[in-house]
Image (cartoon, rainbow over all chains, first blue to last red; front, side, top):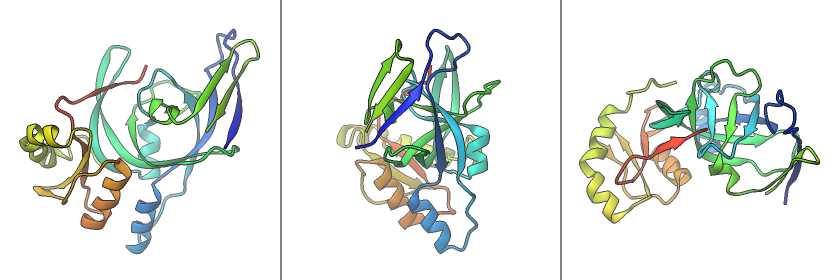
Length: 147
Length: 77
């Protein structure tokens, strides 16, 4: 079982929330298929991700999805603060850098524009969180994740 | 990255089968390229992705679609 502690200060208005380092890349099956076809593989991209219990699905910045060349396998509608957007659905793998949490392989990742968001380029949504035990400890200013 | 709207042909095929599939295989995944449907329903996205890669290859741009009667809108805030 993996365990990971994140700093989080709910009393600081400038704290963006619990952030973790993640690496997003194409899933193993896609990489294997690329290799078999002699295609060039982009390097995995490290980025900051917000633990977001308000997000029903995991989302990545459209810019990063393009840069990672994540295989697109569909489209879906997402709603953020009342506005609805059509977004891409991609097959991807997420690794949690600097932790012993198990990677999440071959999941659907939606891509949206992260406008004026300097702190993170990914939202870890409930499709991943549902597999974890997450404890928010406001007084101790930390978040604990067990997988 | 593929633009939005790339899957219009595949979504049209999906719509033709939506009612039937949502009765027989709700929540399962199907794989479609053009008007061709990969054989079978898949209980997970990962299995559907594998089947799509096997059947159509990595360069073809196939659709992996979960079967619902009504299309969900995913809330992200």
